[in-house]
Image 1: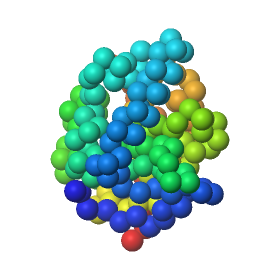
Image 2: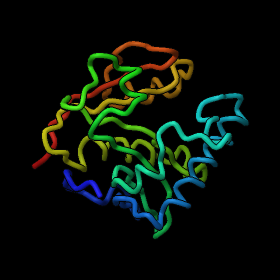
Image 3: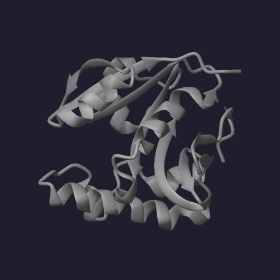
Image 4: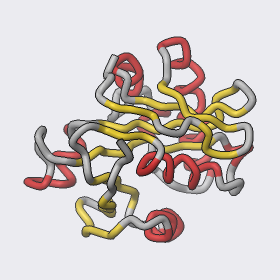
Length: 183
């Protein structure tokens, strides 16, 4: 498992902690992601539809094995999830172009999701804030992410949380934030 990080603060809100996902969490993580993909489809969005078709463009199962997935546990149950890649994925290379390379100083956020029962509770924001302040990755000073460009709500969410819009590529908005991880 990937160990090039230090978690400085596990507690992100009352009764909610962030921990590295373990292989036994995989089924619950995938169920959460499918739940969100189904909800998105019910809202008319095609975002994450690959998960419903059996295709995971971010290979979450393997990412759990590598140690790149972190879960938010609320009273012992998984309430949220996020993937933090220390090297760009194929997806990141496509979106970020020459800015993405194995030695860049960026951590890439993918699959940030919160169970629907915790929607609008601030948990998603708490997880996002934890990604840039509660965990330290050696040699990393930037956090990058992308979201579907056609969602004003998502774009506003990332902007409100201090992420700078870096342009659009193939229908996806790119955001990044400079961070000084605690040591």
